[in-house]
Image (tube, one colour):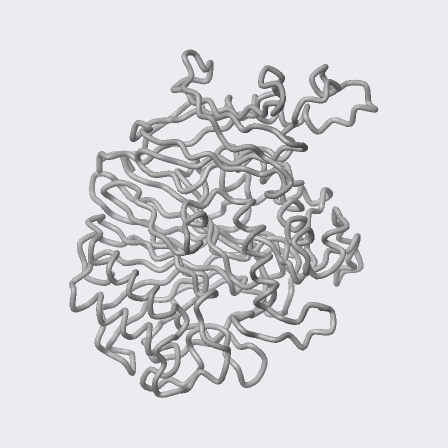
Length: 521
């Protein structure tokens, strides 16, 4: 594959990690540098970049006190002649987090950045800078694109285990030197408390880092914020964030399991039963802890398209905010579906406008896998009836028909959610609904959560499970394996797209090569 080498990327991260580690040293140890004792703002939660395009990107940081965010960028690690960006004032209203948009960046270049936090009353007093790096997508097709995806972090009580090496899957993803990472949802488990220890089936003990906010289900804004901060206690994740920009979407566990708008909870663990109240608090914390380009729009939406140059557009869906209530999902008409009418129209419009060779649809839920919400209700799209589309399938059928008749090429669906890895090929000759072109759906996850047996397939769109790796028992811990991520390589010369499904150590389990220029795919 033609892919741009940037040999300086690793060394800049070593400097970033050293600075971050110094910032978190307890002053009682007497080994912290002088600035840590001076009352200057500190950025011990690391940095993140997100929604990077050919000429722009977002940089995130969290301070330990009120501070002015300042970002400096450079083409080199030495930061000679840096460009300076004045960021927001960080305060309690955003939990001392902030995001700065970088504009007019050069395409196809390695961008080195550092974040300084300045005392709002004395701008000359700044904390130790925290550094990171990212690549802007190239405007030249021949440079190629590589990215990784997965989802589901700290679920089912499996949190940060120092004995296990923490969230070590992030090191395996970073080793591939991807241009970006798609998190397909469930960035936190707000409904999943973390206890200090869990006894494993073999009698050994899984030990978790614990915090007060993770001791119960999240209901208050402070508790939702604490869930996001929990994951940033992991050094692997902070290291990854400083090296690889993200494209983040959300699903249910950012709020509570299988939620939908208007739901009233029957879960006795909650004192706040109104899901809309919980979702509003969760959305605020979500917007504070990730650099996402659309969340500060008037509509505050998660769905968006991220342009990655001539080879790739990434369409980020939100199958949570606009869905109808979970039900048996067998209604003969369904205008709202799982996307809502407005998002569906947006997706059609943006797909038809896209001139990218590949259109990756980042979906927070699978299409043809039956995902139940207890009995008899359905959580995802497919409900197990192999016949003509019903319920939420009607909306997906409309979209697939649109792709076919508008002759939209190069669509590939990526998802996580079900806590195993698999590849499904959808073919009209096998399907009850036939007015679409074949396409692939790839599933990969979890990052660090319980693994589960495979879901059944629904034949409405004719899926064939070409590959699967899943446990036979429920809630297998990360120590038991079955933690996965996926990699996508787009070759700049041929335009071929290669998907590799990988285990947590990077081992390749399955490879599929797709050819460009085909309607659907």
